[in-house]
Image 1 (spheres, rainbow, N blue to C red):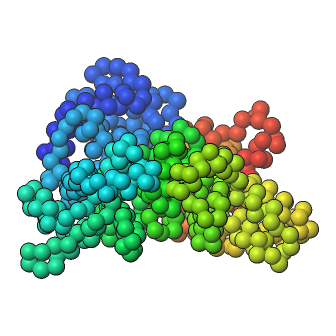
Image 2 (image 1 turned 90 degrees about the vertical axis):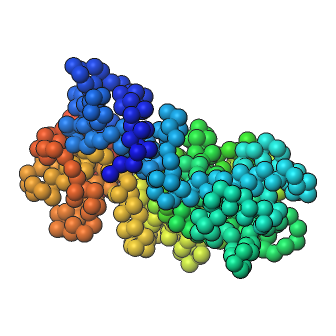
Image 3 (image 1 turned 120 degrees about the horizontal axis):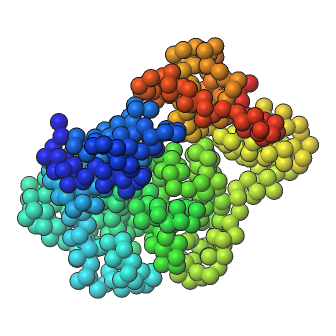
Length: 507
């Protein structure tokens, strides 16, 4: 059952206006029609009903309200789509009546504002930020604050009836019945936001010799380090614009790079780069630059970061900083050299293959291991040939030496994320109708789809994603005919091009 807030939003957000802002709509009687953006659609099969406030595609079977359309088109969650439309149409949704995590966002936003206002009166904190090259412009952009008093924070929360809710974040410790301690006391406060800009946690930096220098909020129901990239809410549009993301290790690294023009920078939060991080970055770009310290820890961080990035089809470049430097300090003291370093960053396999000399070297083992994470078979083959020429070992032998578990994992990730709707329909038809009833000889499938086809041939449905097994189409025969038309082999296509598109077929 929908809440009153969502009903009000759907009344204000006219469905024709919402969908029409994404795709062209054409009037047809009392309704509107369009080509469906969620499957190959030669003739308009998506219908929008203004009177009922719903849309439906009669080709692929999907439909829903305006919020559902935004969620699917933008590839975001339903709650995220609610917030996006609420902001666009100036609808105030009472977060207390929505999911409890949405209320926590409000609580943390209030606390971030409290800290931010406190900073204005803390001369020593402002001077510290100035010493690190952080101007008022960056203070505003990142809503930087300061924690000066636990009692003041508690009073602020009590007046707004938020104390009990904020305690759940564990940023505030209850010492006794009426005494609380802010875990960030006497520290610079930097709000940590999710990709949609909601405050989910805080990062804090001591301005004196207090240890540890940095503290992050404990993980909570809305904050998981492995799911969060600092500054992604700002960086994502700049990442799209520049065509690549820069990944660093700390939030001051991000802020300093921001000041010299690299607003496409995100940071990890004291954890290795996870598969979730890689998947999130792959929504906005196909290329990542790792900008880590040149010390042993920095080099180790690079290698721990690579597998997930490579598995998600991301090209990785690396820029190692001079000894004793980090992105923050270098941006402040030698920004021209840092910009040059970023612009001249090297592709990871260019670095690794150059260092390979014998099959017994660590460089050889590291390179072969990382190649196994690549989902692109053509790319794998090209790199193996380069190594083959250097070490005088046959490509087939090198291929066999790749860790099979890594290969399988990379294939699974690629399969799950890269299939077109038409390919999903074909695979669904192969499962439901039988392989002999699908004209596979007349179509071209991607390497990912071919891998799944082999699993179907071997009756191994455990490897098939639930999305394919439960694919919801109104008429599978109609959808299959449309899919075959979309994937059909052009008889004018050169034989070599056809072969190239089939590379990756499972053996």
